[in-house]
Amino acid sequence: MREYQGLRVFDLCSLGCGASVLAFGCAPMMGFCDRAKSLRALETAWDCDINFFDLARSYGYGQAESLFAEFARGKRDRLFIATKFGIEPDTSVRANAIRLLRGGFGGFRHLCRKERGAPDREDAFSGHWSPTRLRRGVERSLRELRTDYIDLLFLHSPPARITCRPELFEALDGLVSQGLIRSYGLSTDSFRAASGLAHARYSIKAVQYPYCPASGNTDVLTDPPDSVILNHVFGGRGTMRSAPAWIEVLERTAGLPSETKRKLRADEAASVLADVLINAAFNATGAQCVVISMFSPDHIAGNCRAVVEGSRFAATELTLLAHALRHSRAAEFQR
Ligand SMILES: NC(=O)c1ccc[n+]([C@@H]2O[C@H](COP(=O)([O-])OP(=O)(O)OC[C@H]3O[C@@H](n4cnc5c(N)ncnc54)[C@H](OP(=O)(O)O)[C@@H]3O)[C@@H](O)[C@H]2O)c1
Image 1 (cartoon, rainbow, N blue to C red):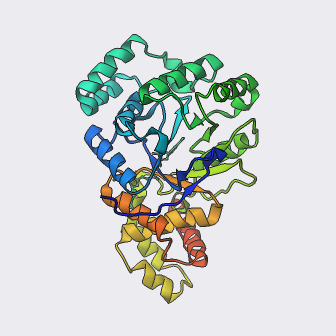
Image 2: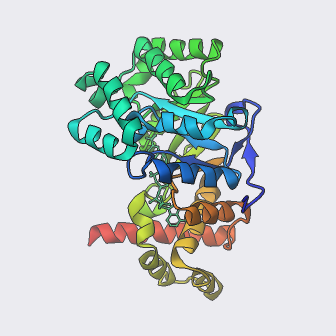
Image 3: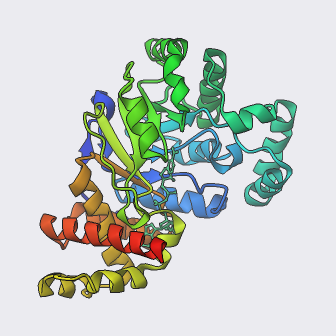
């Protein structure tokens, strides 16, 4: 059943096909979330009008892309698929054990395949950025995703020295010309890396970086490429679990109008905090999209509602609340 209609789409990377302004982050697939939970979450997101999915070769110990392909069957032309190159799946003994546990027989098959062609340890830790490795990574992603094109290929947390590798960008342009990828961009969990690299340009069409006042990430990219996507907007798994404490902190903010205090108490703490974090991110950065990891159906529906219906807070209130979150976090660290 389609619970929420009307999630907006935007022209990601100017490709002329719409991507939902709320994207589904696939990092926990086959890691924190097993196969059944992952498929259920993907279907729920789809029912809520999300068509933009953010994957990586490394997610789920290398299994997220192939699981995604099961969900994507019959939907390819309506999906916007981003995946990433540059970090190899973890192939340590512990990772292989988790892969088996999460994947059942599929995990076992995958494990046999990986052992035959496992990358060396240097790749796993330093990333690998040669044109040959790029092509191999993209071909592998295409096979796993069971598609013949990737809408957006991100360089996955690349080092700054990547900008001195014009041959890599030429190879990326070549993949675009061949139609194997439709565009490429940068995805990182560091704002500094994003700003340093995004300005190197080449034909970088999109950049993904973290924004979350509750975890101290409040820098905003000036002069960004075509499309900006924010990640880590909830500060990962920990922040939302402490939502009641964060709301209490916000309520104590000096000079907060009583009407804003009333709105902070108007609903369950997690859903109010989600509203603040999602809408403050859009409000402060001008980004077109936020990507969230959300594997609980209630969270998916709630986050879609926060985007579709907009915030219960006015823009000025969101600015005030974001400021309060950032400062209370800083104070917490100084204690
Ligand atoms: N270097 C990179 O390229 C990079 C780095 C970081 C992130 N990313 C991308 O960004 C995505 C998200 O980032 P993140 O992993 O930092 O996580 P996040 O989106 O900041 O937070 C995810 C956590 O928030 C919870 N949550 C979601 N909606 C909620 C709600 N309405 N109420 C309460 N809790 C809620 C989720 O729980 P449930 O799962 O139980 O719903 C999960 O524990 C990743 O999946 C990945 O696609 C990319």
